[in-house]
Image 1 (spheres, rainbow, N blue to C red):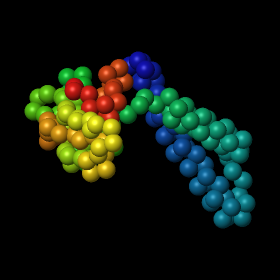
Image 2: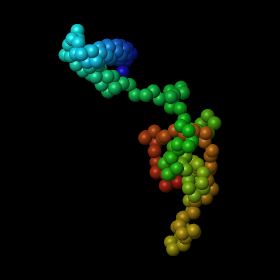
Image 3: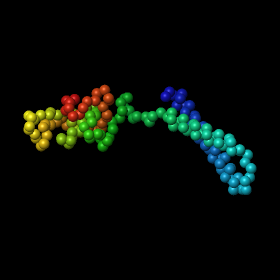
Image 4: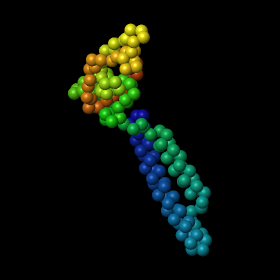
Length: 163
């Protein structure tokens, strides 16, 4: 949406406010006329209906054409999200560590955010704690914020990808 469109929408919004105030004055006059024995109004109901319809049309246009809420950015990048909102289901994300963004996941087995780990696969028929593998040697992190990975670099978290 360009700057001229934004200015036009803002002007129309102000016009809506004026029309709604005028409609309120007319409605107050109608109520006063009703209270004072059906005194004749100087404003016929047809213009009132047109004003209300125009106001409704403008509001609808403002709502449907409103720009999306701005995303907080820093040098063109989205601001990191708070850690209490990070996915803890194995979904990979960028964890913010110092001035770096490192691809990582929450690993339930380690109870930590990890960027890599090793997986030892057991010989057929052998298990450790009921699993045929054992994850070990994690690289753990304590990120201060997180960002979702862009769609072009997502990978399955269950592979133990050494990102």
